Amino acid sequence: MSGKHIIVYTLIGFTLSVLSILTLDYWLAPKVIAAESSQQTWVFITDLGSSGWMAVFVFLWWLAAFAIGKSQPTSIKWPSLRKKAALVFAAVALPGLFVLIVKFFAGRARPYTGEIGFFPFTPGSANASWPSGHTTTAFGFAVAMGLAFPPLRWPLMAIAALIGYSRMVLEMHYLGDVIMGATIGTLGAVVVYNWLRPKIGLK
Image (cartoon, rainbow, N blue to C red; front, side):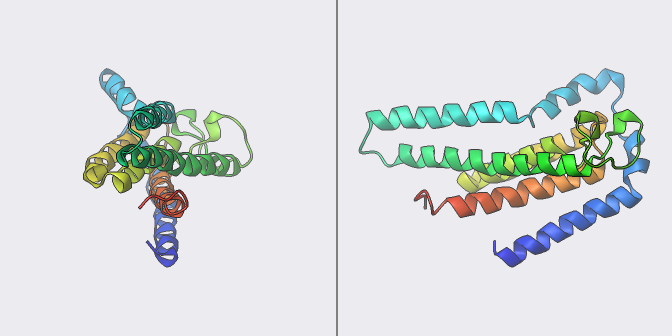
């Protein structure tokens, strides 16, 4: 993906997010809230977008590839898997850190607070709605894993979309937050992965 394409897709994602904020978010939010009986299912789905388990998974993957590679020094498979683990970690972590900064600057109130609007430079989770961090992480992981292992791309993207929807169902985010999170996660993963891949010698 060229720099021009990245700029275009970023502008499209940002525009769709802003349009959603201006026209859909506050109307749609009460219509997608989960019934009490189904909340546990959506909590499980939303937890799949947690950066914590992804970090543990990627670390164990890197550690296993490192350890097995040491015992099989002539194999090229394990060093490659170790490099892919590092790439996936960076492709998820860097966009995630970027979103944390944006959240602080934007200060959008979450749906469950009952507040409407943006409160810039306000610390705390209650005003950290835009963009959605879980959605950023989920799409970043899906795209990075898809780049490393292409057959996984579409199943993981479907799961990422479900995670994004779960954030709205649980009153944690609006649609505009999810759209922006998906945009940053997707494009951030592509940029980081493709930027780092030649630097660490991965074909």
